[in-house]
Image 1 (cartoon, helix red, strand yellow):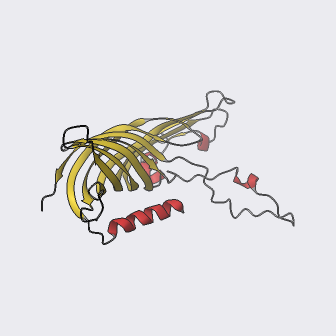
Image 2 (spheres, helix red, strand yellow):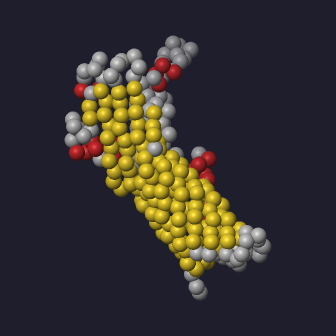
Image 3 (cartoon, one colour):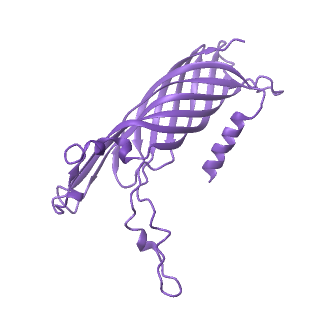
Length: 257
């Protein structure tokens, strides 16, 4: 609920009739490492990618000495997120699950920022701090999911999306959630029109839904000795969400009026 309220308040601020105006536009190109924060599978990063454009609003008419330092930014990015994953069963030799997600999203970030001109350096050297929610829509991607368990020969425990599955089994968003809501926060440096940003991009929504087979064991009987499983039937056992550490370079230009 707190996450929803934060996003609602941010959007309300962005669309409020404050005395703001477009002041800058630009583009960014970035890369870094992307992973999925899953508690059940061991994961290792894949190459993360980001390209997009943006426009800045500034509150130059505010009667505040910091008005020109505060800005809002809205943009459109194409991002690549994913992970490698693996799980090895020690009690069953040669049993393993492994694979990867390579997912491409259209991302809309709504950023609140603060830029400060460094007084000890020549003019047009700025330090930026920024934070804000992101809204992500999956476009396409590739999923590889392989499991081998010789001690359990059933097909549900021995499969490969590239071998035993059909073409939809290897398409990410036929198996994963297409929509994600996240947050971006970071710091940047600007020299004249050139920018460099370091930031974290974290998603809040689990990529897939998987039944929690242990959920019924948490249910306690009532005073009549009856069990109510209605609250645990939909509990998701999968906790994996997108997470990335990124660095980007960019170029921006002022909007003249």
